Image (cartoon, one colour):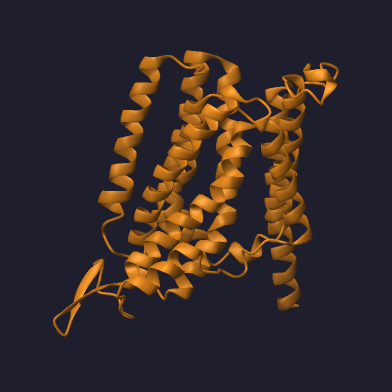
Length: 328
């Protein structure tokens, strides 16, 4: 159920649509490699906008939904940074020219937003009808957290998914790019360019990421509006973040550990909430387990800030230590 006024939500969607149109289809359509200054300015702008938006939620709807938004936004943003590892590998594997990478990310992010919107609607519908789905979400997040800790992640190597492999078998695709074009002509024959495969790869890969991120944010808020806006603000500025952090991603060595703490915490929180609203007959006779403590919203935000902030600071310290050792 929405915790914010309808008029506020409508205005928010209009403003976010304008943000996306400008960021992805005006600025993003200009093929170029953004400078460090441009990247920093864009990222700072969207971070400030997210902080202001959270303040507006606090003013119009109260502190609880505002803290839920901040928690969700920080979680999604942190997961997005981790997912940039895979985007770097995809761009490298498909040999996307540097000047076209910003445009590719623009379209890929748009596809991702559409799919995430669908996922959020499905997730909200499931949660409203079947509270036991929290057991599944929670177990999956705990499994993902453990996988991150033991290094069972496949971020270091990208493998084409089944959709892309099947597509290669049924359509003609050239080996070379033709600017931003999806279709080109070779010797009088029409071909698809690799740009089509790259778009689909970025978009479908992000759908795989959504299996982690959407359950995680539903563990922080049940309001679909807050879930969606948290995702939008996390995706805005992601292309600039890609260019700014591209050379530094492999140095954020403790980020997976920080993310594992966040996902594990949210997973446990979801299981606890599922126990509170339990309807499964084989658990406590189909009644809620009310002795399980409830996790306050402020504690979720504190855990996220400490885990992600601590992992980032530890990564920077290790990077500086290694650089000092090389100079010595």
